[in-house]
Amino acid sequence: MSENEIPSENVEEPTVEQAEAAEATDIEELQNKLAEMEAKAQENWDQLVRARAEMDNLRRRHEREVENAHKYALERFSQELLPVIDSLEMGVDAALAEGADVDKLREGTELTLKMLLATIEKFGIQAVHPHGEPFDPEVHQAMSMLESPEHAPNTVMNVMQKGYLLNERLIRPAMVVVSKGPAEDTGQENNTKIDEQA
Image (cartoon, rainbow, N blue to C red; front, side):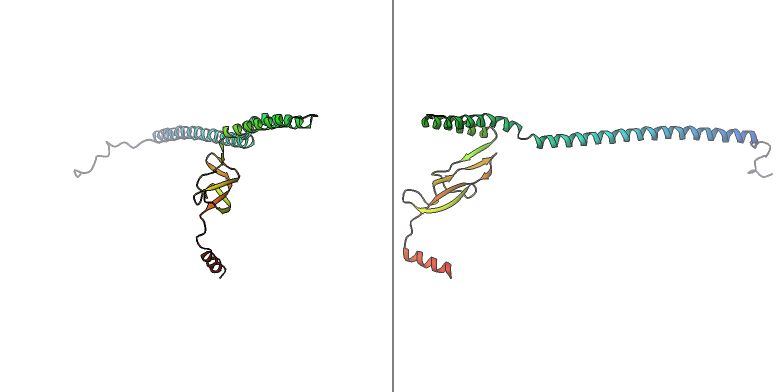
């Protein structure tokens, strides 16, 4: 017998019962691990379903809030305008009454206008009344230009219609008459017109 050989009497081969028991133990361990993994998978699935339901609820709630914000955005503004409407209706009733006093009607109309201007200012609407200011094409619309020795060129001489800004954003330009410098030479002016026509 060589040195590398192991005596056969020392090595015991497992019996059939031992092999079956070991195999049963391995199967039982695998079944336990499978049951654990299935439980973990079910737990993860439940969490996913709950998270999806929560996301759907959040999305629906957000859509409702956005819809309501659009629907009722003007509610506060409308409530502030109601007293102005009431005042105008009282003015119309007063004007239709016998012996209506024009001075009182004018006074009531001026107060109503002040009330309306105060209301729109609360909501960031500002009037643009640029009389005497330099012409600014960003917020003014020139309706005509007139020569004026009393005004510097490109100065607003007259406001035909006020403009308005909403939170510093132009919603209507002021319609204005702008001054221009006097024409120096009528012959030069005629030449310019001829050049333009050519």
